Amino acid sequence: MKSEPTEALNLLTTLGIDHRLVRHAPVMTVEESMTNGVAAQIGSDDHHVLKNLLLQEKKGMLILLIARGDQRVDLKLVATEIGSKRLSFAKPETVEHAFGTRSGAVSLFDMLDAPAHVHLAIDSGIFDLTGTTGFHAGSNDSTVVFKVSDLPAVAAAIQPEYSSVQI
Image 1 (tube, rainbow, N blue to C red):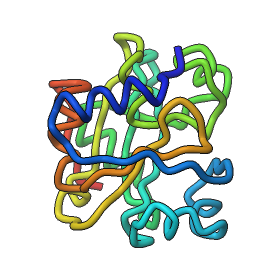
Image 2: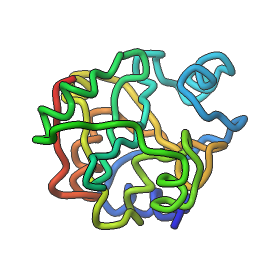
Image 3: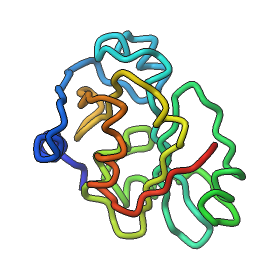
Image 4: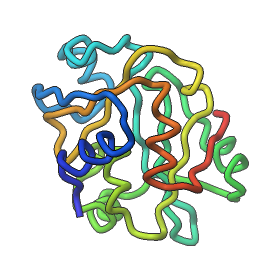
């Protein structure tokens, strides 16, 4: 189920979005990315490093939330924004079942192969950023880098009904 870098690269090429693939040491968290110099290696400012959080509703719907790495996420506020009563972080076995990977390794490009019960939500504040950002594609030792301003087009191509939320 895990997406391959070629799927992400092909999508961006089809959309006419400039991009590049950067290979680096494996990272599982935003903190590792900054500590190990990956943010600098991909050419992103620290506040452009984004985190991908897999959240779950009580009824089983999953939400992949993309937020700034330096931002605290208020799950109650996100739940209200998407019309849910309560959200929690997905359990490792849920991540494995839905995406074929372990917690901490899910990324925007994994939504290319996501089950139907997974919804994409992006913090609206990200859309005000400039410069570049990146997402893992297929593994946590490479990042596909593109302009933050292209994120809405990429998200819409992956999941046309994605949510923009304020967190």
